[in-house]
Image 1: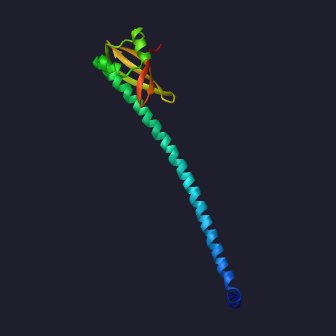
Image 2: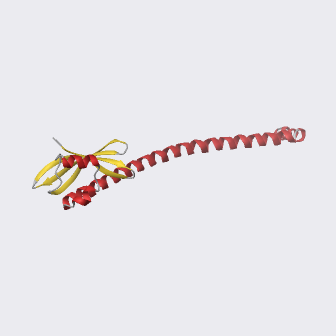
Image 3: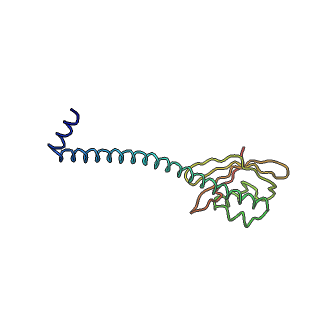
Length: 155
């Protein structure tokens, strides 16, 4: 009996069967497209999140590297090199005696904090004449580079 119904459908309307096959094919394609877009949307969101994290890490690394170069110049007593890493604001603080440039023997970067886009604050422990001091150093991004914008003694 199943064959007779099939035979009747084939003999009666081959165009209907062809149309049904095309409809099934189109519906299958639409389901596959929907699944692909859903998976790609999730993957793109994941990739965008990863990109944001990597960019933040690169910014932190750039600020940290600029601070390290500045502090190493202070330890070496190379004022001209250290002055390349400071802004006018930090130069003014140095002139006013807010912090001392010379005599730093060692340093340790203890904490970092991102204040806003392009601004980081670091807590640095400096050793000077076997005495330890804490300086709060703020770095500001100007162009593509970071510069020491403010140096304040903690406490």
